[in-house]
Amino acid sequence: MDIITTRLLEHEKLVHKVLGSKKMLKNIANGAAIWKVAIAAGHKILLCGNGGSAADSQHWAAEIVGRFQKERAGMPAIALTTDTSILTAIGNDYGYDRIFARQVEALGCEGDVLVALSTSGNSANVLEAIDAAKERGMKVVGFTAQGGGKMADLCDVLLAIPTKTTARAQEIHEVIGHIMCEILEE
Image (cartoon, rainbow, N blue to C red; front, side, top):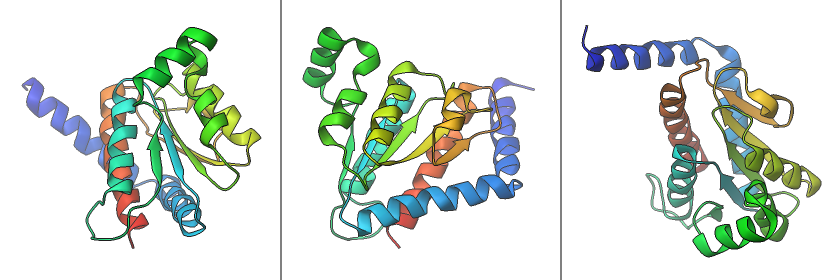
């Protein structure tokens, strides 16, 4: 079997695992509900992650602020991964582990939501952002791979994709993020 077929079959198998998990389906619905309640109450969604997860943060923020599928008013969302001046200043002055937490401290308020992405569930800068969010009375929706790492005990809702393969977990994160954006627009 060639690599193309192998990877597509791995993806398909993982989609079926998620579909077959009542817990996972419930967590997707609960995560989307947290987003919806926050936005309806006039709060915002802050998103963070590293690498591909940073890209997902930016992508979902764009879908929320702009639009996903419906013409509607913009909704407040901020990817904490995008401002290079802020990231480099905080990294230089406080250390890389603080790049997201410092922004949560400055921008996050009670009732807001932090969307925290880390396939390992152990990224120090994401964990510190979660701590900062919790200190402010924010809800946390986490996206990880199998097991959830340290994030498993820290998130209000955890979407731990049942795979140890980062690429496959990120693919499913993207699908779930799109589903949650669609629910947000209902």
